[in-house]
Length: 334
Image 1 (cartoon, helix red, strand yellow):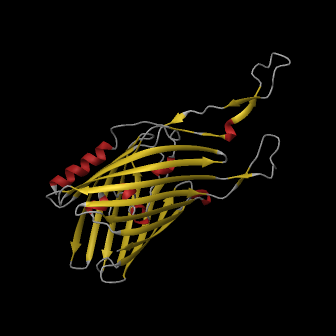
Image 2 (cartoon, helix red, strand yellow):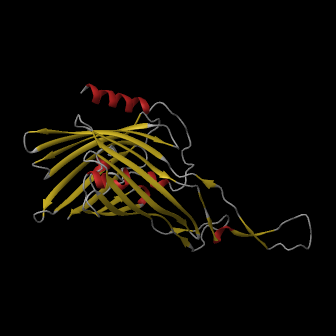
């Protein structure tokens, strides 16, 4: 317990070491939005747990460390009527190797085009974000795993778009003392830049000259923006009460490149050999003006066949100003 307390102290202390304020200056910000009804129900403290279909987002080493053979889909009714969906599938490709595929999709309804002096144009436009990932995890020992997740990214609004690539790297280690340590660095990649037909405009090169061509085609050049890089360090442990009750606690320290560091904490209680699971957590501790407050979740496991189960999880997250969000996921082991 002394060692565990030392790690908890280090995680909490690390959240106050660095302070930056670049909020709202990143490209593809959807890549840092927490995914998974189970993980979000635990307050986003999932780096050292990573044992369901959302593990490729939190820590790609999780699919190997936890031997995941799962189909997983997660839907979030996010803020402003935005639909946030995540799909993944994982399977073994060797004795100690695992492969995963994941898709992140952010969509919303069409919006009306408005222009200065003409708000009723009758035109509409759409916006969406997508990421397509491929994960490879390797168990180096029975206690230590590493994982990589490479992904293609696209942001689109009207006729403009930005494409990019990124890499996630994670590790999971079961210590000799029983608890787990997890680390991950997500969204490491080059800057992204918006381009597209809507950036082509007519330009009068020199308005002081009469008779020149006033309809020269010009291209508006946009800035390049960094991806939302984030470093996570987590610790978790399972405690068993009797033969049918499990209590899992987890703590994560998060260091993003666009904000100050913060801590997530969560707990999960499994009853009747995880046939019913209750969870709760707090997000963004020690972060000034934090939006996320507290989350709650519930899950059930229904056995299908001898080696197959279906998992249904739901979570409710309370936000301070943007309203509450809901997530539901379905996972099938095979």
